[in-house]
Length: 360
Ligand SMILES: NC(=O)c1ccc[n+]([C@@H]2O[C@H](COP(=O)([O-])OP(=O)(O)OC[C@H]3O[C@@H](n4cnc5c(N)ncnc54)[C@H](O)[C@@H]3O)[C@@H](O)[C@H]2O)c1
Image 1 (cartoon, rainbow, N blue to C red):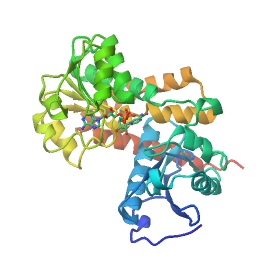
Image 2: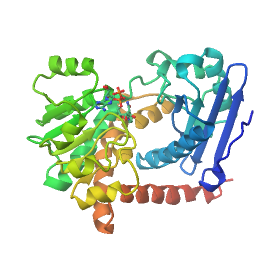
Image 3: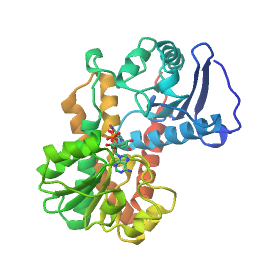
Image 4: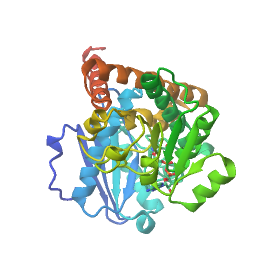
């Protein structure tokens, strides 16, 4: 394994293992971060991205792998948290040799880390990686994979939103509520369908004209606004960020009229402290990593041999988990994001501890 220089100190972040991988001929430079295997092998996708520096790549993998440990813990999975980054522009350097070299490094961890898709990697890439390792999921249907994870992601977000609605309005039904969906991509489209089926009014926005065309043709009753800022300021009951991270920030939170935030986007809170700002304004935030876990539930199910009904049942439980978090937040007088972290840490500690019972 090649080691390229780093100025970060992973030892100070609580990660179990950080592996630098290099294959000069194919141009592969990857970092695999394993935050915790307390609950089982670490699962998390591979991000292929042209980071400005090695330090940026390392910071991202440390952050993302820690996030996966919390997400997998609250999704009820027997899986720990990990993530990998490949440093480089996928448009320029992605090749069969590079992906297979990466697959061999994943294999060398002997099952401590399972990889899957993330930004810059796709189902077809997982099929290539799988030629070198069995520790890969999120594969194509023709290779026994589960296919599009956004179906269950949207279903899980809908369940989390129902739990939040119940907490605020006493009923999980979204009938008659106005829901603002920012981003009509893979997840936003399915979410819009669930909301309309439940009797909600949907107001939406997207920067991509094709997404707008789709919604005009498929759901003409959906009202459209110019941009995310207009959506935040609109008279909506629920805000569902389904595009990029950082949707909840110092500009949007003061302008927000919704009482509930529940959406698919990762890392919605722009910085620490935003969760308190939301709570102070009386906005109930259903933590992103709790409600958007349907995708990881799907790829985790694939490890067992994919069964859609079983995976959907697991994603439906996001309703119960969100309820539990909101109750805990009230009981402990903390924002839901803090309660979610506490619940995840509790499960990792309580269930992880069982490994100390000697078996043979
Ligand atoms: N797909 C999954 O299974 C999954 C799982 C967990 C989390 N997520 C997260 O959910 C979010 C959406 O994922 P996706 O798979 O639907 O992605 P996507 O790329 O298919 O859709 C994102 C949509 O947002 C739109 N968009 C981008 N910037 C925008 C802006 N400023 N204002 C309004 N719209 C904008 C894009 O045009 C696109 O239509 C991402 O943050 C993703 O990380 C996705």
